[in-house]
Length: 610
Image (cartoon, rainbow, N blue to C red; front, side, top):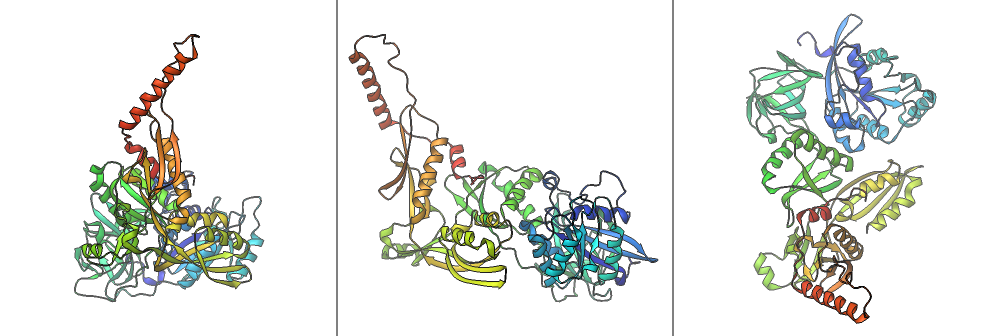
């Protein structure tokens, strides 16, 4: 690796909208540089996860080192292939921190789309040099001229800088490599400086512990070096360093400006924090700025199917969140499902992929539920204040919900949401926000066709599916961001579910008064479908205090008692039916309704079609 000085190193990423051909272009670049052999089987080589293969999308950013000879000089090119979905934009922003330039791929058929714009601005703000590439020119509907005009208008990049390629057929791809070497600057760093390495990704290996992907911003690193993590201040000895071509290939040393992997016997999952800085023992450096943590948009409760699996699931979660650091994890518990976690994801697709990876990579099946948010109650009764030692309590479990008489005010968490959207969708979006009890704070036209809206949202209205509803209303063009805005007073109530007049603790929920009727009706309907029928009638009711707001009746099984009557007097029939009704009434008095566990799971589970 020492034969590649800093001047002949280029670090770059490939960014684009979904399905614009990033991974295919990466395959061609790997083939041209001889990193992988040319065969017909090279389809999305860098998509290694089973999830990615099945869905045909990139989920994890993958890096690979390429060796290329240009005008007699050997160059080391570090390529990072990134995902395109908005749910994984955190991967993109992390990858850019290890790069000096990007290849911006645009589909000649589709033109510029939402994520193209978002990813362009990520690269632009990071002050990286940008090489526009127009892909898929071999399609019969391709219109590269139109796309070039769009790029010029939106991004101020002259049309003559665009390279027209077909990644599938390999047309003009060599030109992209030459442009990378000419346009992208080498990294600004020096081998003589003390070691400074940024951990931009990490995975967990059962045998070797944590494998960290690092970008060196100074110095050199070799096997046997003693290093320290700036985040945990723990010391490690380096067992192995190397480069990814896309598979791991050990090397003697890595030098400033290079991107590779490092194994240093980190046993605990929490030790390799993404965004951490590594330096040599006794040679401390100013830590790199790292990454700002991702904003979770969709929350879900996650519980083990069997409580004995709790500790296994805990370690699987820790290992997977190491590899996917944009998931936030908080402890949570439910009366019906036991101990679990409240997880925050960047979108519904992210949640599905995370769940699928848990199943495939760690063999864990879990229950995902609609999540809860923490509420607060301001106490007024002196007895309760004395009991809790403070006049405000936080309620996560509906079982702890204090009675209205002893509370002066209930509070719910709120967020200040910012929505940026093309102006043609503004009417639909305002209606959506009003349905979610949001209060408009601001409306601003950024330019002639983009609008910025600011709304104050109750958190429980946006945790489940607001983001996805917003995306589908606006054809994927609206973007949403939010920040915490503290608590505000709200008209909260506890809704009980009664079966034949007996409350079922596990199904009680805390809900806003305006939404109670609809939610109660939905819950009763779902229960009617899941509770097994009995020999007596079951009344399923949703109640607020003593007031019943919704009811469904589960009909009993009935034996046909009049089947043996052939003609005869009507009084004979009536006598038999009366006797049956009497028996059912008696049975209802003494019969208990046991709600089976899978009925709880079905009722509490997230509705996929909602």
